[in-house]
Image 1 (cartoon, rainbow, N blue to C red):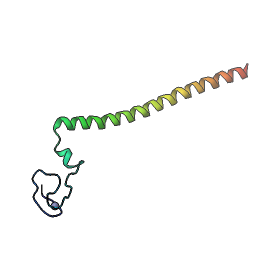
Image 2: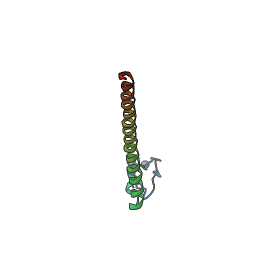
Image 3: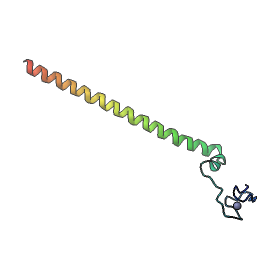
Length: 84
Ligand SMILES: [Zn+2]
């Protein structure tokens, strides 16, 4: 790897031997060096987070439906009481 600051060739080093420039970029270079298995694990983590978010919303909607159902049932019961 060539240092972007002083153009010194550093081979596989992540820190420049001449100027100490840190050439390691975890989100770009590290991901490219990951094996297919490691990438699959990372992708599963991301998908898992998304599924968790969707599940949270689905649970919220379900709770809302159940709550409104009970509210309507209560209203109907109260109305029945008043009418009688
Ligand atoms: Zn350098």
